[in-house]
Image (cartoon, rainbow, N blue to C red):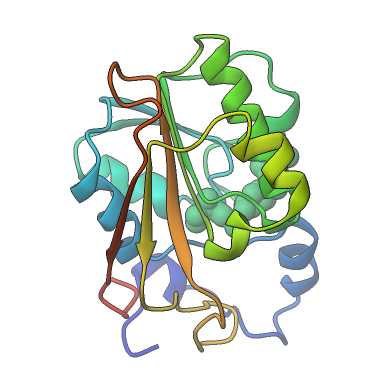
Length: 200
Ligand SMILES: C[S@@+](CC[C@H](N)C(=O)[O-])C[C@H]1O[C@@H](n2cnc3c(N)ncnc32)[C@H](O)[C@@H]1O
């Protein structure tokens, strides 16, 4: 990593980090600003946004910088936002829009919970950054894609920097966006784009 954000430079994310075990348990993988920028440039997001797996606030802080009011929560105590909030058990949405990078171990459950919120009329839009291969698997075909297709998939053609190792992830990511906006439902748009490969 040639350039780090001020927050990230305060601690080490190497595998020798005593927090590494905690990182693994909670599946903590922060999102680089450049990856959130892709979403904000591409999608008309409402003013108020809920980041329900905020970690140390890498997505939240950038959304704020771009003028949004952000409600941030997380199950784990990362020192940012409201902690101890399990998104999968939350009954009420905290804003009409959800933007997050969900934990990879439960990303399917996160998407399903977002689809529930959309169906219940609790939210208007959900945007989740997930590895591109998420599109595969029989159970996702049954429980997600057959239920409701995204309105937009923004596939990022370069791999994301992995803050834990300093290298890049070996897989690609995409923003999967579901919107309740009139005329959008059922019309899936797929875009590919690239990002700056640095953290900022
Ligand atoms: C891949 S990290 C992403 C962090 C942050 N969204 C970002 O992009 O920088 C996943 C986050 O999900 C949190 N998490 C895991 N299970 C959760 C749950 N059931 N409810 C809320 N947050 C959860 C972890 O603590 C971790 O901070």
